[in-house]
Image 1 (cartoon, rainbow, N blue to C red):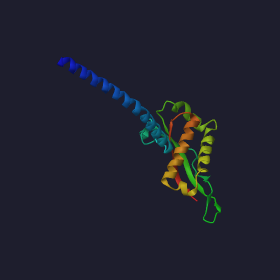
Image 2 (cartoon, rainbow, N blue to C red):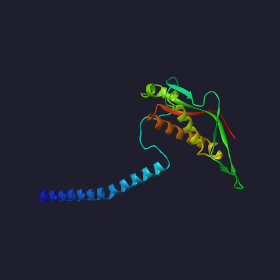
Image 3 (tube, rainbow, N blue to C red):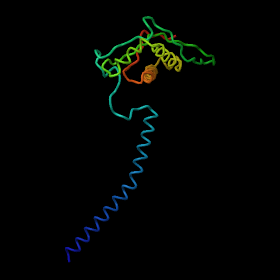
Image 4 (cartoon, rainbow, N blue to C red):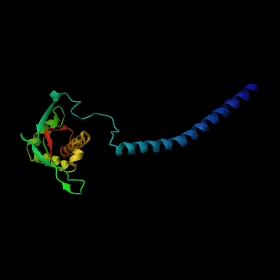
Length: 180
């Protein structure tokens, strides 16, 4: 009789354990889904990458696997910045004088087919237009900060990669930069 009573007690405890596990799963899964959704929204709001994978930037590729092409020719080019407002409410025009160049990954699968398009077919004009339009979005004060410069570079890079529908362009560079 003792063995049967122990078996019944064990079966009752197993059944209670299963029921409590089911209750915990029913209450925790929706909460975990809501937490994941919130984390995703916060990350997208502060522009964090949620996916792992290849990182495309000039720092991860050896220098001998890159090519740099200057979009503005041998001379610096003047780009207009978004007008800023001074303390008296007047609009002030500012300019950035710089050379804009792109760094390309020569080992990328799209490099051979898309690289010639930069020098031909008018694409270099489109790339300079991307640079011009991007600079027009930023004020003098915004672009003088390192964060602002990085934001401008990132925005230009993203638009150029969209233009070519490829990520063989890995960086946008500024050199000989002056602000007025």
